Image 1: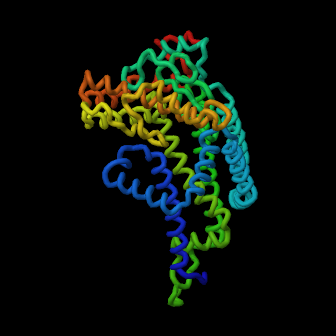
Image 2: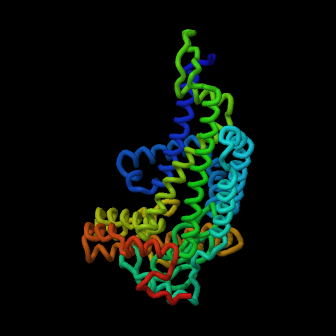
Length: 430
């Protein structure tokens, strides 16, 4: 007979479930923050209101401190997240060996519980190292001409005769300059904080395998913890035990009381199981997203770029074309108030005038990144304006919804694992 209270157990289960749900929602909102849905209408008003309220409640010093932390962690190359990942990886295996493995050996002594975790651990570390140090596909003077020919421009997301403002090299379609790494990368996907490197055409395959192995690690680990807890439940006959409710009456065991009891007796194992389920969901969603990109021959950068172009098209379509001096907001992250008629070079000059002499150099790294982003958004703005002179907004949006780089399922997968060797395409690059 368990002497517990059902409301307390329910409060524990509800509180933990609510916490996991809230974290998942926040993660989804973070990755969906740039969608037009959250910038217009009721959700847009709520977002703007929350921003204004936070500006009033949070002191400016705190905002500057948070901005500095954000800059150090997410706007510069740092091994911080690699160290965090390895620490959590070792901690997870340590807890598995100390807390879970003895129960597995006791309840399932005929099975081998060591080989798979060790192999998975070594595979994870190997893929992390390879993803971190391998060449993502850096564009140089030697190979830039081959890259320009390899993926053609679509005239909408990518256009001909463009040049990287930083590298001063021709800019091939599907490439992007990474301000953190300081070079252009072909078929650029994103800069990963966990690998501390760019992910591009040359190393995206290792990243996909790294994600799949992480998903297997969390799934297998969670399953092993659940098996250990199942053995404990069966060994102690917990389903046959009754508990005393608030009226001092015996009641049959239920899931909420069982989870609460296990958490009180084996807190680390229950925490491992709950964390594993949460990470399975979070990493699973992220992995499925990248698998979808691989199957359709897209990149994260292209999807963001298409979303930005779509917002510019809709904004320009609703703008009075005669108001040539109207200043428009064409982006986030402090890139507001850019005049659509301001020459591109003047944007760079303005940033130079504001930053010259402040830090002893003409550009700080931060200001240089901001200037490059402003120039990039300015170019997109002018390009869309030219398109709208020749085509309707609906026609352009229809073209934007199509993926011109989709080669078919098998060729798409081939291009991920064997980049620059897609049958029928020129591969004389390196």
